[in-house]
Length: 248
Image 1 (cartoon, rainbow, N blue to C red):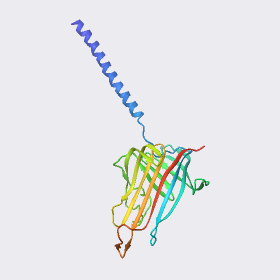
Image 2 (image 1 turned 30 degrees about the horizontal axis):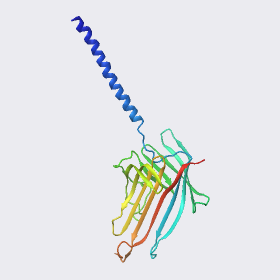
Image 3 (image 1 turned 30 degrees about the vertical axis):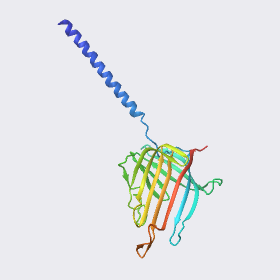
């Protein structure tokens, strides 16, 4: 009896220490795995970073069969960035344009962007737009233009933005991005009276890499459609990234 009473407590304590060690190991492993899971940064705000875009636009107007086309280049550079005590990051973005690659950049404006715990807001052209919401999820839907009023004549009216192709690779002409997401802003392309399509691609560590905005009204005569999907008026603008990096 004496042997049993001394050996059993010893083995029991060893067993407890063993189980405790195993549990601690798994807890530490879980903490480390969670700590090092990378979260894509689709709207980086590093001061000095820049993006360059090529833009092609086609404008359809009533009475003209062929659209007026124009092309130019845009540059966005983050000139200033800070984060306040509430965790809200603010950055200033300088916007410049030029017609040809050999022209000098002409700065035309500067706007602000704010990154908080649940969204990205951009104050651009006197429009406060909700560009992204967190967390990234296929179930997320939001009104990107909730902060200002618009009537139903505006192509963006009545549409909710949502995510597609989360964390998927994308090829934008010659540039490859391993991790991107798509924000679909409006998708009404099967109607008989109009065509509405707007979407953007964002790349991890880069930001906006592609922006497609297409809005057409089909030709009518006294309320009747003329032929099938003949464009009466509208605009198609395609903005693609062609370079990015850090300024000197």
